[in-house]
Length: 250
View 1: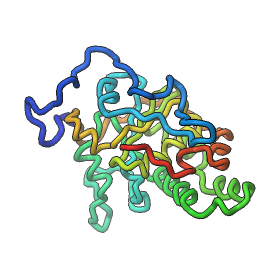
View 2 (view 1 turned 135 degrees about the vertical axis):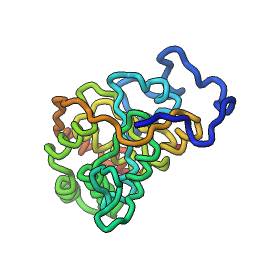
View 3 (view 1 turned 90 degrees about the vertical axis):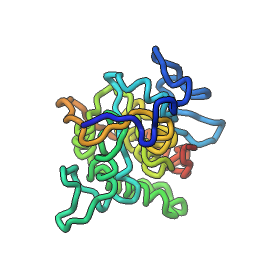
Protein backbone atom coordinates (compact mmCIF):
# COMPACT_ATOMS: atom_id res chain seq x y z
CA UNK A 1 0.00 0.00 0.00
CA UNK A 2 1.30 3.44 -0.86
CA UNK A 3 0.16 6.89 0.17
CA UNK A 4 0.33 9.89 -2.13
CA UNK A 5 -1.19 13.33 -2.45
CA UNK A 6 -4.36 13.62 -4.50
CA UNK A 7 -3.94 13.58 -8.26
CA UNK A 8 -3.23 16.97 -9.70
CA UNK A 9 -2.14 18.51 -6.40
CA UNK A 10 0.97 20.64 -6.26
CA UNK A 11 2.72 22.49 -3.46
CA UNK A 12 0.66 25.58 -2.86
CA UNK A 13 -2.53 24.03 -4.24
CA UNK A 14 -3.75 22.82 -0.87
CA UNK A 15 -6.45 25.22 0.34
CA UNK A 16 -5.55 27.22 3.40
CA UNK A 17 -6.75 26.04 6.77
CA UNK A 18 -6.37 22.30 6.14
CA UNK A 19 -3.53 21.80 8.60
CA UNK A 20 -4.77 20.97 12.08
CA UNK A 21 -2.88 20.29 15.27
CA UNK A 22 -5.76 18.94 17.32
CA UNK A 23 -8.80 16.75 17.05
CA UNK A 24 -11.04 19.46 15.68
CA UNK A 25 -14.79 19.92 16.02
CA UNK A 26 -17.84 18.42 14.38
CA UNK A 27 -19.11 20.16 11.24
CA UNK A 28 -21.49 23.02 11.93
CA UNK A 29 -24.98 21.75 12.64
CA UNK A 30 -23.90 18.15 13.22
CA UNK A 31 -25.77 16.21 15.92
CA UNK A 32 -24.13 15.54 19.26
CA UNK A 33 -21.90 12.46 19.48
CA UNK A 34 -23.78 9.17 19.43
CA UNK A 35 -26.90 10.67 17.82
CA UNK A 36 -28.25 10.69 14.29
CA UNK A 37 -29.85 13.83 12.96
CA UNK A 38 -33.55 14.64 13.11
CA UNK A 39 -34.62 17.72 11.20
CA UNK A 40 -38.02 18.10 12.83
CA UNK A 41 -41.14 16.21 13.94
CA UNK A 42 -41.92 13.41 11.50
CA UNK A 43 -38.79 14.12 9.49
CA UNK A 44 -36.42 11.47 8.19
CA UNK A 45 -33.81 10.05 10.51
CA UNK A 46 -30.70 11.32 8.77
CA UNK A 47 -27.18 9.94 8.86
CA UNK A 48 -24.50 11.95 10.56
CA UNK A 49 -22.55 13.59 7.76
CA UNK A 50 -18.90 14.45 8.07
CA UNK A 51 -16.65 16.34 5.70
CA UNK A 52 -13.48 14.97 4.10
CA UNK A 53 -11.45 17.39 6.23
CA UNK A 54 -13.17 16.05 9.36
CA UNK A 55 -12.12 12.54 8.38
CA UNK A 56 -8.66 13.63 7.28
CA UNK A 57 -7.61 14.95 10.67
CA UNK A 58 -8.79 11.72 12.32
CA UNK A 59 -6.98 9.20 10.12
CA UNK A 60 -4.65 8.42 13.03
CA UNK A 61 -7.49 7.46 15.38
CA UNK A 62 -7.16 3.83 16.46
CA UNK A 63 -10.91 3.31 16.62
CA UNK A 64 -11.65 4.84 13.18
CA UNK A 65 -12.87 2.37 10.56
CA UNK A 66 -13.29 3.48 6.95
CA UNK A 67 -15.42 1.54 4.47
CA UNK A 68 -15.19 2.12 0.72
CA UNK A 69 -18.68 1.31 -0.58
CA UNK A 70 -18.10 2.06 -4.25
CA UNK A 71 -18.54 -1.65 -5.01
CA UNK A 72 -22.13 -1.28 -3.81
CA UNK A 73 -23.12 1.26 -6.47
CA UNK A 74 -24.96 -1.14 -8.72
CA UNK A 75 -21.86 -3.28 -9.30
CA UNK A 76 -22.27 -5.79 -6.48
CA UNK A 77 -23.39 -8.50 -8.87
CA UNK A 78 -20.01 -8.28 -10.61
CA UNK A 79 -17.93 -7.85 -7.48
CA UNK A 80 -15.42 -10.40 -6.30
CA UNK A 81 -13.11 -10.76 -3.37
CA UNK A 82 -10.07 -8.49 -3.89
CA UNK A 83 -7.38 -10.09 -6.03
CA UNK A 84 -4.02 -8.75 -7.09
CA UNK A 85 -4.90 -8.88 -10.79
CA UNK A 86 -8.35 -7.35 -10.22
CA UNK A 87 -9.90 -9.34 -13.07
CA UNK A 88 -12.58 -11.93 -13.63
CA UNK A 89 -11.54 -15.32 -14.93
CA UNK A 90 -12.71 -14.15 -18.33
CA UNK A 91 -10.27 -11.25 -18.13
CA UNK A 92 -12.82 -8.45 -17.74
CA UNK A 93 -11.74 -5.73 -15.34
CA UNK A 94 -13.89 -5.10 -12.25
CA UNK A 95 -14.31 -1.30 -12.14
CA UNK A 96 -14.91 -0.85 -8.41
CA UNK A 97 -11.96 -3.00 -7.39
CA UNK A 98 -9.67 -1.33 -9.91
CA UNK A 99 -10.74 2.09 -8.63
CA UNK A 100 -10.12 1.02 -5.06
CA UNK A 101 -6.67 -0.41 -5.77
CA UNK A 102 -5.75 2.74 -7.69
CA UNK A 103 -6.98 5.25 -5.12
CA UNK A 104 -8.84 5.17 -1.81
CA UNK A 105 -8.90 6.98 1.52
CA UNK A 106 -5.91 5.75 3.56
CA UNK A 107 -6.99 2.93 5.85
CA UNK A 108 -10.28 2.27 4.04
CA UNK A 109 -11.22 -1.31 3.22
CA UNK A 110 -13.39 -2.26 0.30
CA UNK A 111 -16.87 -3.56 1.02
CA UNK A 112 -16.78 -7.22 0.08
CA UNK A 113 -19.07 -9.19 -2.20
CA UNK A 114 -21.54 -10.79 0.23
CA UNK A 115 -22.32 -7.57 2.09
CA UNK A 116 -22.36 -5.50 -1.12
CA UNK A 117 -24.95 -7.85 -2.59
CA UNK A 118 -27.03 -7.61 0.57
CA UNK A 119 -26.86 -3.80 0.42
CA UNK A 120 -28.01 -3.88 -3.21
CA UNK A 121 -30.84 -6.30 -2.41
CA UNK A 122 -32.21 -4.21 0.45
CA UNK A 123 -31.78 -1.05 -1.63
CA UNK A 124 -33.77 -2.52 -4.52
CA UNK A 125 -36.51 -3.59 -2.15
CA UNK A 126 -36.87 -0.17 -0.56
CA UNK A 127 -36.72 1.51 -3.99
CA UNK A 128 -39.65 -0.61 -5.18
CA UNK A 129 -43.28 0.29 -4.59
CA UNK A 130 -43.38 -1.55 -1.28
CA UNK A 131 -45.17 1.33 0.45
CA UNK A 132 -48.40 -0.04 -1.01
CA UNK A 133 -47.96 -3.26 0.96
CA UNK A 134 -49.13 -3.72 4.54
CA UNK A 135 -46.55 -3.59 7.32
CA UNK A 136 -46.49 -7.34 7.92
CA UNK A 137 -45.74 -8.04 4.27
CA UNK A 138 -43.03 -5.39 4.16
CA UNK A 139 -41.44 -6.85 7.28
CA UNK A 140 -41.47 -10.30 5.70
CA UNK A 141 -39.83 -9.07 2.50
CA UNK A 142 -37.25 -7.05 4.41
CA UNK A 143 -36.37 -9.96 6.66
CA UNK A 144 -35.88 -12.20 3.63
CA UNK A 145 -33.66 -9.61 1.94
CA UNK A 146 -31.42 -9.05 4.95
CA UNK A 147 -28.20 -11.04 5.21
CA UNK A 148 -27.77 -13.55 8.00
CA UNK A 149 -26.12 -12.24 11.14
CA UNK A 150 -23.12 -14.52 10.67
CA UNK A 151 -22.58 -13.07 7.17
CA UNK A 152 -22.50 -9.55 8.57
CA UNK A 153 -20.27 -10.70 11.41
CA UNK A 154 -17.77 -12.20 8.95
CA UNK A 155 -17.88 -9.11 6.71
CA UNK A 156 -17.51 -6.81 9.71
CA UNK A 157 -14.43 -8.68 10.88
CA UNK A 158 -12.89 -8.41 7.41
CA UNK A 159 -13.53 -4.67 7.59
CA UNK A 160 -11.88 -4.53 11.01
CA UNK A 161 -15.04 -3.45 12.83
CA UNK A 162 -14.95 -3.57 16.61
CA UNK A 163 -17.38 -2.58 19.33
CA UNK A 164 -17.17 1.16 19.91
CA UNK A 165 -15.63 1.88 16.50
CA UNK A 166 -16.31 5.13 14.67
CA UNK A 167 -17.32 3.88 11.21
CA UNK A 168 -17.23 6.24 8.22
CA UNK A 169 -18.63 5.00 4.91
CA UNK A 170 -18.21 6.64 1.55
CA UNK A 171 -18.93 6.01 -2.14
CA UNK A 172 -18.34 8.06 -5.28
CA UNK A 173 -20.29 10.91 -3.80
CA UNK A 174 -24.01 10.58 -4.52
CA UNK A 175 -24.85 8.46 -1.47
CA UNK A 176 -26.47 5.65 -3.46
CA UNK A 177 -24.28 3.05 -1.77
CA UNK A 178 -23.30 4.87 1.41
CA UNK A 179 -26.87 5.52 2.56
CA UNK A 180 -28.13 1.90 2.51
CA UNK A 181 -24.85 0.71 4.02
CA UNK A 182 -25.26 3.31 6.80
CA UNK A 183 -28.67 1.83 7.58
CA UNK A 184 -27.54 -1.80 7.28
CA UNK A 185 -24.56 -1.46 9.61
CA UNK A 186 -26.74 0.28 12.20
CA UNK A 187 -29.39 -2.42 11.74
CA UNK A 188 -26.81 -4.95 12.86
CA UNK A 189 -25.69 -3.08 15.94
CA UNK A 190 -23.01 -0.60 14.86
CA UNK A 191 -23.45 2.37 17.19
CA UNK A 192 -21.66 5.20 15.40
CA UNK A 193 -21.83 5.16 11.59
CA UNK A 194 -21.34 8.30 9.54
CA UNK A 195 -21.41 9.19 5.85
CA UNK A 196 -18.61 11.22 4.29
CA UNK A 197 -20.06 14.07 2.26
CA UNK A 198 -19.13 13.96 -1.40
CA UNK A 199 -17.38 10.61 -1.13
CA UNK A 200 -14.13 9.91 -2.93
CA UNK A 201 -14.73 12.74 -5.37
CA UNK A 202 -14.81 15.30 -2.55
CA UNK A 203 -11.76 13.69 -0.93
CA UNK A 204 -9.79 14.25 -4.14
CA UNK A 205 -11.01 17.82 -4.47
CA UNK A 206 -9.80 18.53 -0.93
CA UNK A 207 -6.26 17.41 -1.93
CA UNK A 208 -6.17 14.97 0.95
CA UNK A 209 -3.79 11.95 1.02
CA UNK A 210 -4.65 9.02 -1.23
CA UNK A 211 -3.63 5.39 -0.74
CA UNK A 212 -3.28 2.72 -3.41
CA UNK A 213 -3.06 -1.06 -3.33
CA UNK A 214 -4.42 -3.28 -0.58
CA UNK A 215 -4.68 -2.32 3.06
CA UNK A 216 -3.13 -4.69 5.64
CA UNK A 217 -5.38 -7.43 6.96
CA UNK A 218 -7.12 -6.34 10.18
CA UNK A 219 -6.35 -8.01 13.47
CA UNK A 220 -8.67 -10.82 14.50
CA UNK A 221 -11.37 -9.00 16.44
CA UNK A 222 -14.37 -10.35 18.43
CA UNK A 223 -16.98 -8.45 16.39
CA UNK A 224 -20.50 -9.85 16.44
CA UNK A 225 -23.44 -8.49 14.44
CA UNK A 226 -26.90 -8.72 16.00
CA UNK A 227 -30.02 -7.48 14.27
CA UNK A 228 -31.60 -4.49 16.04
CA UNK A 229 -35.40 -4.48 15.72
CA UNK A 230 -35.60 -0.72 16.29
CA UNK A 231 -33.71 -0.15 13.05
CA UNK A 232 -36.23 -2.28 11.17
CA UNK A 233 -39.05 -0.26 12.71
CA UNK A 234 -37.43 2.99 11.56
CA UNK A 235 -37.40 1.73 8.00
CA UNK A 236 -40.84 0.15 8.05
CA UNK A 237 -42.39 3.26 9.61
CA UNK A 238 -40.78 5.59 7.06
CA UNK A 239 -38.64 7.37 9.65
CA UNK A 240 -35.27 6.49 8.10
CA UNK A 241 -33.63 8.66 5.47
CA UNK A 242 -32.86 5.45 3.62
CA UNK A 243 -36.52 4.45 3.53
CA UNK A 244 -37.53 7.91 2.31
CA UNK A 245 -34.77 7.85 -0.31
CA UNK A 246 -33.22 10.96 1.19
CA UNK A 247 -29.58 10.95 0.13
CA UNK A 248 -27.06 12.96 2.15
CA UNK A 249 -26.20 16.20 0.32
CA UNK A 250 -22.73 16.34 -1.18
